[in-house]
Image (cartoon, rainbow, N blue to C red; front, side):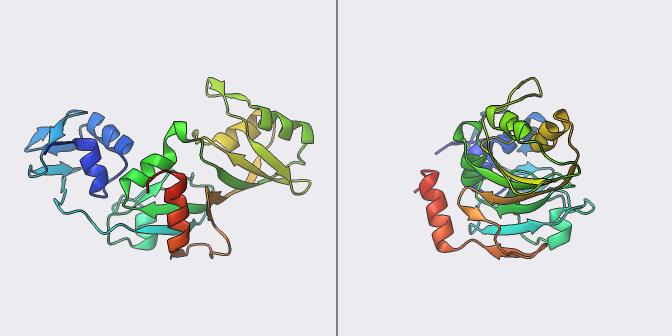
Length: 234
């Protein structure tokens, strides 16, 4: 039985389906020595390689980890990169982060080899919540928080409505349901604020809690079950 190549790569824990499509567009996926095409069907017994690495025909044991990313670590699993998640955690298995945090930001990242879960969380139509703590150099004006809640024009289009809660003169919480590149920093910059610290504390029902900076823990059975139920994956 044939299967689409992006689905096959996701099931083998290589990446999400959309990331697989990006790899294919970049010419990084080879099937029997030929550059793969987006949408192509495969049986699974082909010589399949991503970035020169052979893709196993066996499905890996699925793993789900919460990681408190420190500032200065890149959201990358390139084993040859510097200051990446892969080198920081000395990852021996093929895991990838769901979504991204920029180098200057810290907090919760979910690491997995479940491509379908990653696709379900990050798909733009999902509107899944991600919560952040933001600390600014300047004092925040409540009117500007209202502007963030109602939506702002960045990167050529309006942001989706957000939820905010002011915590102090320089700090607030914000809940996003989309994941544009450096969205919170761009919103703050447009309103005249400099971000001093940005930390993600929640992705849907998964909370950072008191996980120490740089530490990793497995998701609990209840966390994973509730997450999959909300994503309609079970």
